[in-house]
Length: 305
Image 1 (tube, rainbow, N blue to C red):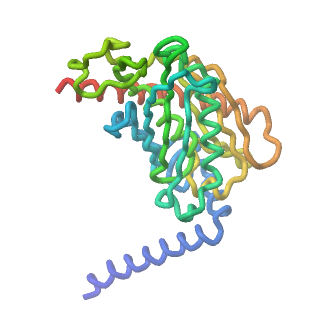
Image 2: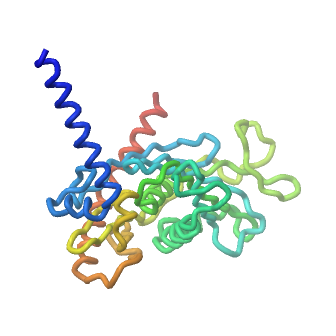
Image 3: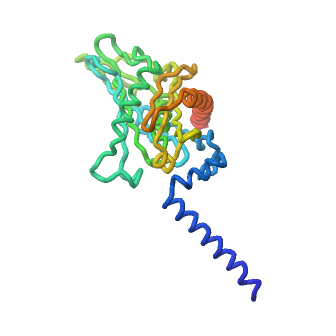
């Protein structure tokens, strides 16, 4: 009889211990985090310089001209690109970026009240995509002075668990990588319109003879680091972001040139810490590039089967 009660007692003891740890984690989040950092490990068992597992799936939205689903740990982003013919060509940017955070993505987002961070991320994404030189706007021109493409980039945050800008940027890059420019024709009235599934039977002359991919320039990749005392935490979760006050987001392109550096919150950050963040961002860029290349290869294999 005693042999049966001892395992039960041990299980109860472990459960009590787990409850105490969880209570301590909730009541004293900073102390809980610092106990882990003292051992150079994080609450989710990652090393300080270790990013979460990242996956990219191209072609997630069949109705879009380009799309991608990205998972960065438990953070999930769905990006889609839709092209629209503009006649005459738009004088402003040939790209419109919208970042959405519906209430389902986080308990912090309330119905009817847009998340404060959403427009900030939208603007930051647009700035990075334009300043990086990834997009050659001349490729969006259909007929010089008469018609061009306007690209609408919509990114929906499906689950928000930290490093939202990093996940949003890689999803945007992946969607443009998947983008296929559709066929267009010019009607008798001079109007330019896209050709649907029966493009081979159109009575109008095609402006572009075949669908094609955009030629992308230097692709931007980003890494957000949380800075706490002497520790630098790569790719912070939402829990870590709620505790730590200082963040540095570094964007580098595929040639390792710095596109932007943004610091949010906290006190003055040492140049040594910033240089370390840049070094970590370059290392992360190489890994993200490999992930993106692998996703393209997987898509091409799926299309041939």
